[in-house]
Length: 196
Image (tube, rainbow, N blue to C red; front, side, top):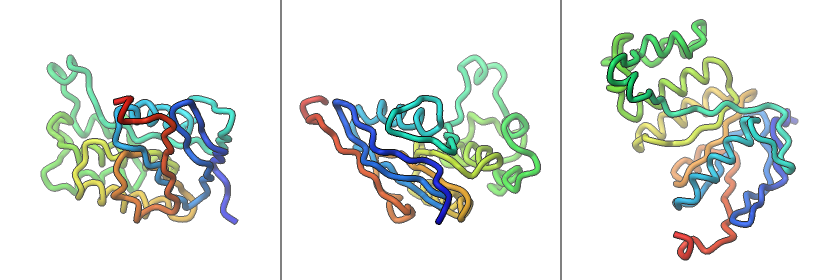
């Protein structure tokens, strides 16, 4: 039997219920949130719990997962000292990893390319590669990616988690359902139409 990494007996509030599930080695879990404004707060909460930053009485974290953040810079930094791809990788990438130079496979990106010039897909990839260079236990979303970028990122994650890693996807659309080993759908306990 594959090693247990996270056990959730269900996360319930007065607004929603996320049914029980387990994360084991090799799992690609999809926590599907509805496309509603309230989903933003739920996603933040779920990420905090599964990364081990926030405790929840119904969730046991044996192996915390690392969230793949969207790469952002402050307005000041962006305007006066924009970060380059090379700088970002130097600060965030495990250099001996197979992912260390993977972003350069996109032919127009080099170490002097500014992060602010990266559109959604490569910006998400650079963050994904930096996290995967350190761990293969991740939690991620599909923010700022088009359909092609979403599928590409999902294939990278699925290949990398293999039998020993694990991934949790939190998102509002279900286009990656086919990639996942478990599909968990949030149950809203409020009327979303009235609450909108």
